[in-house]
Amino acid sequence: MYYYVYDEFVQDAKYERELANIETRLTDLGISGKIARLALFRDASELIRDASLKGAKTIIAVGNDLTLRKVIDAAADHRSVLGIIPLGKDGNFIASMLGIPNGVAACDVISARMVEAIDTGVINGHRFINSCMIDNGAGMEIDCGRKFKVFPVKKCSIEIRNLAIEDETVPAANPADGKIELVIRTVNRSLFSRKKVKSTVVPVKELTMSGENTVRIRVDGEQFEGKEFRISVLASHLKLIIGKERKF
Image 1 (tube, one colour):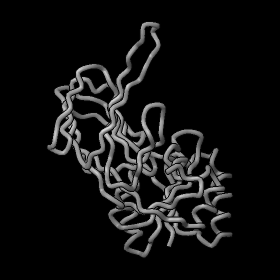
Image 2 (spheres, rainbow, N blue to C red):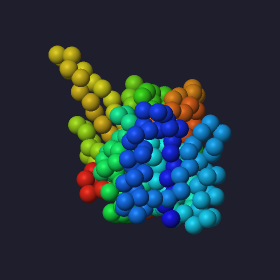
Image 3 (cartoon, rainbow, N blue to C red):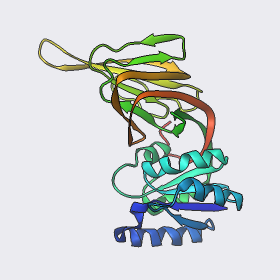
Image 4 (cartoon, one colour):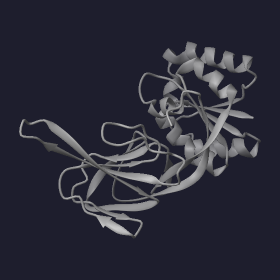
């Protein structure tokens, strides 16, 4: 049974027609199901738990990356298959990585049901799919699985990657290798004031980042604050619906 979780923002009137088209297409494909609508006092975990007890095996988030953040823990706990129908112009990086098109076109990908098990990261007890990012990690202590420590002393960005595309300085992260990647990026300037980014990549299974000051960290687009972050990986832990155009 399919269980569709509508994020609060998609209930805006501007999405009414698109949602109607999505629901019609899902019915045509024979994969319509129960719909739950998130709201301020409606917890996604409770909704998914109740749905799972009633036989729901596939959870579809209707929204964006932050919607996935709201449902991933409960979906993984109940061993559900997780998919997404992305809506809106922003905040759909993970859907793009999974090869899921925006709007009604996603319904056909959901129906094709290509499922792959990927690793998930865990930060302070909560799962993530893509990455965690700190804009300036200078002064933090990074304990890499009690094997060695890293002490960034100059301004740098720190990223913990699970599912991520390649960029100018680092290759794509493999979300099925049982590891996460610690990426430390520093910016140096040449004699002609040109910026040059230097990246250090360290594959690990767990790490702890801590510091004296409170720092902000973005986890799959959601922002948190803290002085200590314990991060690890759960290998092949999450079953995701992917498209043929996936980027990993």
